[in-house]
Amino acid sequence: MKIGQIMKIPPMDGLAIAVQPGATVKSIADKYGIATQELIDANNLSDTTLVAGELLLVPGADTPPLPVKQAPRRPRRTGSASCSGRRISTTGSLRSRLHRMAR
Image 1 (cartoon, rainbow, N blue to C red):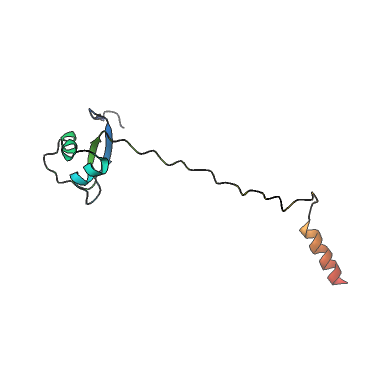
Image 2: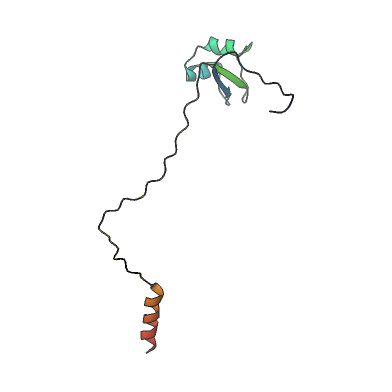
C-alpha cells in the first residue's frame, strides 16, 4: 500500500481469486461449491465473460491450509555398526604404506 491509495474491503467474507485462462463463471462457481448467480451478484458482473487475470470475490470461500513442510527424518541406527572409540587416521595409514613401499 502507498500513502493515499484507497483500499477496498469487500462487504462479505470470501476469497479473492485471479481468473485463470479458460475459466468461466460456472467453472469457478462449481469449483468453490457456490451458485453461479451468487458469484455474479458478489462481483456485480453485468456480463459473464471473464478476462484472464481479472480479480473476483468468491463469497464464503476460504483459503485451503498451506502444507506444512516436515523436517527430514534422520536414518535410524540399527545397532549393527558400532564405534570402538579409537581415532582413525587415514594419513597415518597412507604414511605407513608409503614407508613400506619405499623399503
